Length: 375
Image (cartoon, rainbow, N blue to C red; front, side, top):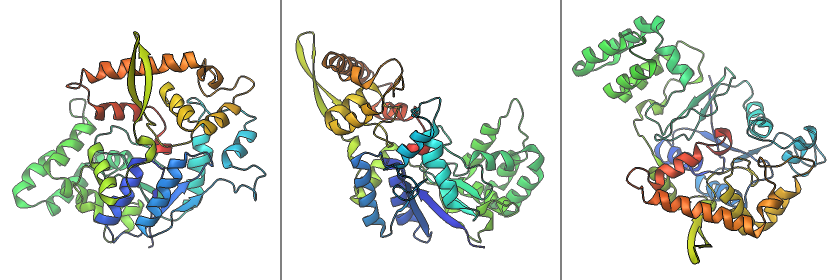
C-alpha cells in the first residue's frame, strides 16, 4: 500500500532544519513538502521558503483554505476568515486562525491516504505539538530520542499489551541485553512506575531496539508506519537540540530565517545611552498575538508598513493585545518603556548565565504559542 510522507514548512528554523536533515540523512524517503500560506507572513518567511525550494530540488506545495480571487473576493485567506468571524480578531483563547488557516487545509490536503507527517520538535523541547485526529495520519518526530507520538506510546506500553511487548523483545533483542530488556518490558505501569519512566527505561536500554519493537507492533495496527515494509527512522538514534538546528541550517547554506538575526536598539537608562538587541522569536503571521511587546516594537521599527497593516485591523474593541492597542504601543514614550524593560530584563538574565543560558531563553520564548504555526 502506498503511504504518503509529508513535512510542513512553517517558515521557522526547526521545520526548515528537518527538511534539510531528512534530505541529507534519509534520501530514500520521498517527502512532499508543503506550506500553509496565510497571506500574512513576514517577508523573511517567504525568502526562507524560496531558499529551501532551491536546496531541496523540489517545489514546496502551497496549500490554502480558500484561493484568493477565485473562491473568495478577499486578497488573503486570513481576510476571508476574518470576515466570516465578523471582524473578531484571533487570540490565545480563540485561535480560529490556527484551525482555519493551518489545520483544516492540512487535513483536506491529506485526504484519506495513509500519511506520515514529520514534525520538527527538538530533543530539548518538552511538548508534543499538533497530532491529527484523522486515523490515517501518524506523526513522527525525528529530532527526539522518542520518535513516536504519545498515542502510540500509550498503546504499546499499556499494561494489557505486556505479553506482546515482552514477546517482541524476546525475538529482537541481542543476547547481551535481552534479559534486561525483557525485565523492563514485563514491568507493569503503576503509581510507582509511570508510563514516562517505563518509556525512558526502555529507551535507555537501546533506542534502536525500542524502535524496532514499536515498528513490529505497528504492523498489527492501522497506523501508516505499520503499512511499510521498511521504515528508515527505526534505525535513528539522533537527538538534535537547538545548537544542532543552527548547525544544520548553516552547513546547508540556507541559514536561519532572517527574522532571528539580532538587531540593535538604543535606550536611555539613568541618563546613559545603552545598546540592546531584539529580534523575532517565532515564525507565523506578522501580527501574531503571541508576540512579546519588544517584538511588536521590532515589527514597528523594522517593518513599519506591516505594523500599520496590523494596526488597521484593530477596530471596534478588537485588539491584538489585552489592554493595549498598537496605536498606544507606538507612542515614543511607550516604546522607550518597553525597550527599557527588555534591556533591564535581558541584562539581569545575562548575569545568571550559569542557571539560564541564551539557549534556555529561546526555548522559553518558544514555549508560549501555537506549535501548529511555528514548528
